[in-house]
Length: 122
Image 1 (cartoon, rainbow, N blue to C red):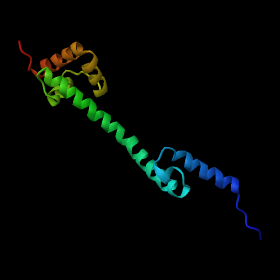
Image 2: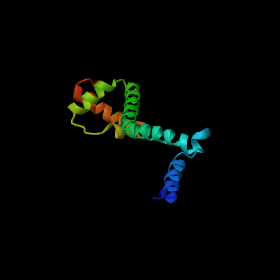
Image 3: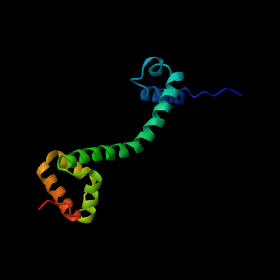
Image 4: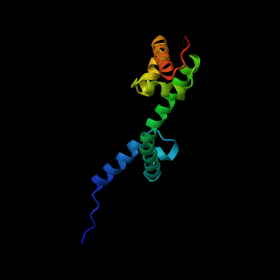
């Protein structure tokens, strides 16, 4: 029985891997044997970090909000507690954007949080 190799499918499969490995350093971008491992490794990290990106951004927003709150004399944890007490429902992304682009509006939100906690100066 003759041996069937199907070179078209093999070429397509190899080109697909090499296309994904474009830009990698050294043999990993040119040789199929090394590109396979590099692409698999990269795809594992890409999958994991798509999940991690969400927590990274939340962490960034919290840092920004904390910095803006401290300039107005309040800690982040007290600020969030004040927002909850005042029934102000805003996500951290929008609070962060407000702190950066609209400092006056953010200061008003902080004052509302202080009033709700009973920390406002009369």
